[in-house]
Length: 438
Ligand SMILES: [Zn+2]
Image 1 (cartoon, rainbow, N blue to C red):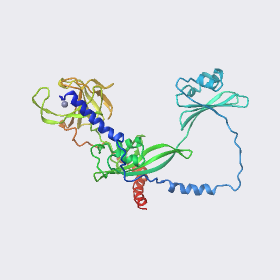
Image 2: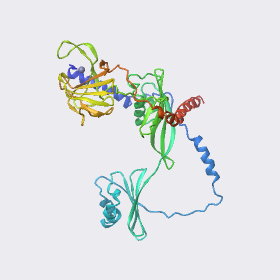
Image 3: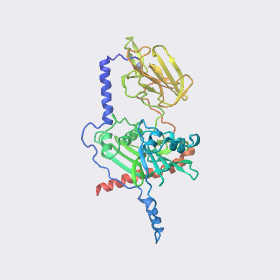
Image 4: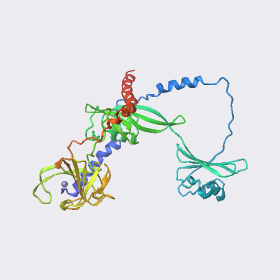
């Protein structure tokens, strides 16, 4: 319940924890850590072969060249402090033109919501009268306002669909996932995404061994034949200390996408292992602990996480709040009931999360309170308990149940949606080995 670490030690331990975390995020040395480099593999050749044939077949014997008139758009990047009026003025148009484009009752109201970084473009006719205005929100989204015969402007939102290509990458870890993945050409956000997929089973700081292998199939989004950004990881595998884990992305009929094992079990667990980030264990589950404040043998039926005051505390699973209030030496405490079998308890909070009250439902990861030292506590920490059928279990060691698997009636859809990506993961892993031998 209580930890009596001198503050200095606590800070030292926290900074060691922080350094460990940084090792994963920032490369500490220039050592190259993958003994394979990324070989770009084109995965779309099979698909595109046929369309090439088709397009050849329809090439006309005679082609007529039509010269499209060149449109001279005047384009400005929206900066902070810009107003619609100032942008029109930069382009040489007065407020009357602006109100005309906005239309009666500001019917073209998209134009009133402009943000720094967006672009606005103006097109005039030979009489220098405004004919079109284009608001370019992103590479994918723009709003086109066009003058009709009556002189009024009408707006239309234009969305572009990026072309999705599939890419493959793999590597072997020498010292850290981050360095090996970086050497294999993955971006920092892809590495974090990858670590999140397997993070329920693998601790990427403590469990990693030299020789661990990873591979992934991911999307690359293209616009006008140029790569515009990386898309989602659609299938991935990780071999940790000889044990192979595989995951595949599936979008359920309700639109929510999650990662599953190839046989449909969730990669997620029903509970987070640790309900606070940036914390270290200051006192373990121990049935014969000498209490640091009472100096008596008192069982410690939970795990203490030292963290600075105000650190958010997350509900470790979906459930219902059955207690949110003072509770003796526990101080400000939240107890969450998860189904019939499980309850979790969070003590010594400085304050409760917004809207967290008895009877309210909470989601996994939702902030239910903040670290403090209310009740019998010598310093800010979270005391966390995990009960199975009313019996206290060690939160660090308890076997966590998987989140819900694919329901039976979605299994067929799951298999057909994920088949291609799994096959790519396996096939390209094999051809990669061949390519390396060449
Ligand atoms: Zn405790």
